Length: 89
Image (cartoon, rainbow, N blue to C red; front, side, top):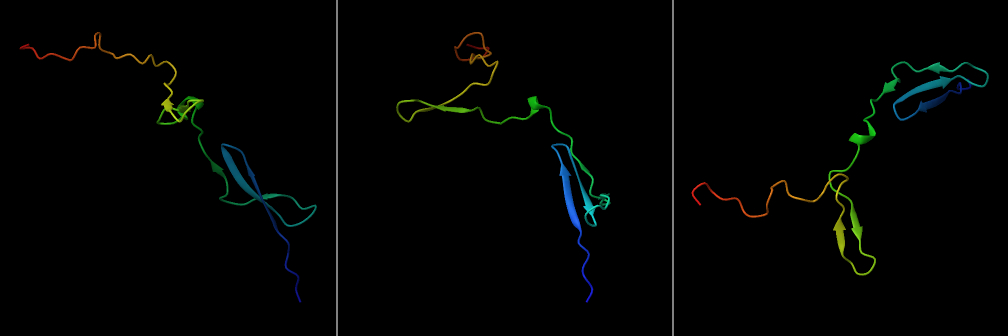
């Protein structure tokens, strides 16, 4: 009866790339598995975020409120808060 050769696969990865190496046994060299090298371009931290603002909850009661994103003043871009008028009014 023939004994099956032991083979160990090892995944080496970080946030931007990954590859698989294999070893035929103790004391044997590690060999890169062809086609296993994967690279991924990471987005800058400023581009990773959410589409919706965060939420906060009141310490008393169940009220929840949206949190304005940084740099938001919460004011309208219009100079006054009166409704827009048509040219004939």
